Amino acid sequence: GNSVTQMEGPVTLSEEAFLTINCTYTATGYPSLFWYVQYPGEGLQLLLKATKADDKGSNKGFEATYRKETTSFHLEKGSVQVSDSAVYFCALRRGSYDKVIFGPGTSLSVIP
Amino acid sequence: DAGVIQSPRHEVTEMGQEVTLRCKPISGHDYLFWYRQTMMRGLELLIYFNNNVPIDDSGMPEDRFSAKMPNASFSTLKIQPSEPRDSAVYFCASSLDGETAEAFFGQGTRLTVV
Image 1 (tube, rainbow over the protein chains, first blue to last red):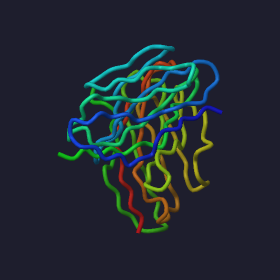
Image 2: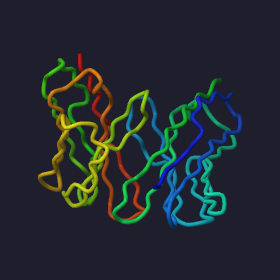
Image 3: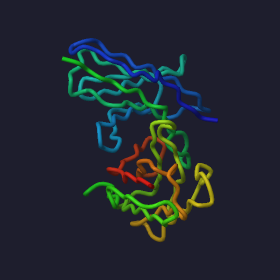
């Protein structure tokens, strides 16, 4: 079946450090891929998405590239801020009837 | 649009009581999802609907859990009887049709069963 695997963390970084959160997926065909972010006490919200191979999603300085050959969608940011502290979820959706499948989430803490 | 609206935001109940969580999806969305989030198990999909019809309820943990969607603008998740292990944050999300469509989440209901 379809599934998502991501590094579980927690990840602790200093402000302005480079961030990478790894995400790999298993799916038939070519799913759409998403990164969601959850700030404390809130629901998940979409951060970025990519819908086909080699697409790059970007938002708020975050980027992720859909790599079909490695079935990966790693999240990156060049310089993190304290306000980026949150839990990040990688997700996929495959097919019109298919549910949105989430990875386990990666907690990020950015310290000044 | 106001987004996905869940009520109540917080619920504290005693073991054995019935609990009903409510969700109003974004107007025009075809899909509605119910998720449960705990520290131990992360984010779990409980059930989802397409055009008010349940598509997959394999994530519903037990017969104590039931969900309905009587119309396109309202859904409920009911737990009867509730148990302390049901304590979690329950999220409702909705989306348009199509695999490129993202899910929009509500703020969640934090349920505590004592």
